[in-house]
Length: 353
Image 1 (cartoon, rainbow, N blue to C red):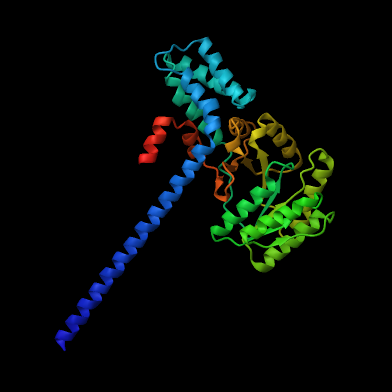
Image 2 (cartoon, rainbow, N blue to C red):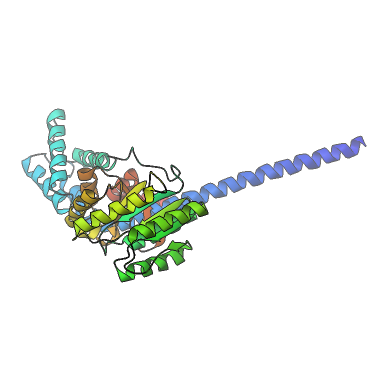
């Protein structure tokens, strides 16, 4: 009997060891998969910023050569590079003032010393306003109202976000409250089907507030985690749009006093300074809490991200760096700056790491 007990003990011990080893292997595989995903994400970000890097960072690197003296001609060259990269006059003026101050305080005379300083100043700008970012778990359901003019990629962004949220285990429901444009709800329905999430819609010309109310009501009944409400993009009629957005918010508050928790403004990065003008107009008609910048991969005007972050102190939440669903990425200021400022040599080192 004692011999049999010892045998059972050995078998049990072997099973425990095997179980521990399998758990350790699963953990290693999970970590490896996660790391691979992060590397791929960064690679897509870096590739998506190629045109902006050429227009901004490569030109800065060419101007800030080791051994070049810091003088007024150099300062003016930096200023021209920043403005033509769509960082805008206001933000460029602030950056140049910081450069002058640093040079004066520390007695710098080597142009190369300004490269990392400008990089860090840009990072500081992009980190503004991010302390108040809400977690998706702060409310259930979390109601996100999405605004923006037609053609900026609003519908596509909603669809991609819905799928990304769902892939992260969230129950999502979409409300097609842009009832003004005939194709709007049809396009949104296509994206809802791709994401395999429910969509609430009514016929063209229906009251957008009624669609929003029905969507939130359905979300509460179905215990959804996230509600995404599409809205009309008729910025040329600011008074009408303001009244419509206010009504949508007011009606949803009957069901949830805090709704909407978020208002995301979608902007097309390829429009450069025009995106800043759109942001100015939309912040007048809606309490925008976050920004989505689309089509960064198709433009050399990506500097507008820096200008918008500085001018409005509203956090950039997502950026589009390609056509694929995974190419709408959650915005991380440090990752963005590292990807933007990564030189060709650094890029090869990352790939081999």
